[in-house]
Image (cartoon, rainbow, N blue to C red; front, side, top):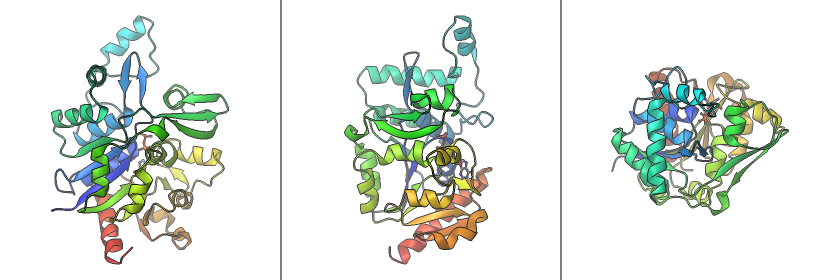
Length: 316
Ligand code: GDP
């Protein structure tokens, strides 16, 4: 059987690398386990930002200008909503809205999130598996100088401005890892489990908080490899470096690797930080990890696979 790859991912940063793997791994052999801690109810709709980013990215529908939502989007709904005095801090394009309406309807009818997601994956022609980290609700809560905030309140409404004091994942202790995700993590033909360069605290930690995920990574025969979200002390986008500083951590790939200690067998470091190489406690592979073009994404994905093969070959 051809080798498979599992990627643990949040939104935009993780979806970039997932797209790199999409054309590299034989069709149907890529599985994403996606953060749902950012999910929320808005205007009566269930919104799953990271799942939707993955879905739009792999199906070629992502909006390259905005970095979220669908390409060629229209905004009639938002205009009408604002005119009527509705809440418009969270922008929903018309095409995007169709997805949220349908998902909300199907969930209300009793379907599981994983089944609804799988139906969308099929409908949009994606030949990879997209697993929500759990069908059970988990809510990322941000303890901040402005009190405890729901994730979207912090991230979108307040533009990540409040100072973060800590993060918690409500409901995670009772959440169950879905059967599909569990099977993907235990597959004998697995070539690598990849922790995408997503925000370790906001996007990856909620996944790791689901009981069974850490144990599955530790038990996996395939190498577990994390890719750095920090390049030369900065996040490529978003609040990763800001949150690290607020949590008293140096915004450095070393701190990210330390965060994943005990789970990872290797760390992909950016070439700009190659001077730090000797200070890691796991094997390191330094390469240019900045992913702008599709070629960049595939190049980084290929580097991860080469690294995994080297780690597997050398014994873990
Ligand atoms: P969000 O949920 O949409 O905020 O996205 P993620 O959590 O998946 O990703 C955010 C992280 O991805 C940030 O820490 C970025 O630094 C990182 N990131 C984004 N683009 C790149 C890239 O091209 N290369 C690397 N190495 N990291 C990236």
